[in-house]
Length: 116
Length: 111
Image (cartoon, rainbow over all chains, first blue to last red; front, side, top):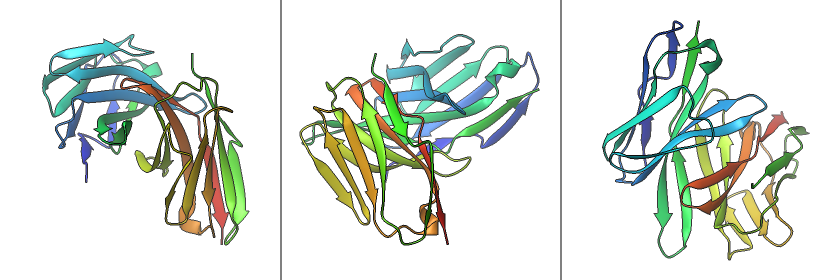
């Protein structure tokens, strides 16, 4: 079974702090994603990475950066946390299902971040 | 841009009832569609993956169908149980880095 883990389930930070959220997958997947999930807005893509040191902006990258130094690890960084970044953050990795010609996403358990 | 809609937003049914959750999307050029379950405060768990060339997939009491031409998918849950209570999300994939999620249907199964 694919396993995607996130460093914290719950996190409380103060406005202006630098925040690191880490995600690790154990299936050698090349593609990894960071989403945030808010009531009524669904999942929104922040950043994704398709290889080590490679990254692409998603729909809402402002206020965030990412780091992918190793294939299994994808970090989301809030440079200066603000209250509007209070949210559930979900990491995912992507498997291409050979023979099925389909892409399947696997999600971590999520990090509930509160910025006060 | 692809838009994914799930109606209803919330559904409450008595235990044992069969039910259908709906997912519609605006652009039929998709690779595949995935149904997820999300328990409160937790991540998404993949339930079923339907390739664009398939019409349906089954896993236990779950059956998902896909009609690309009409931009619709349904998730059928047979003999619902209280443990099925969760939010169900669908997501369509256009390419390896393009995923579009619905906002989900919150299901409550009443014992």
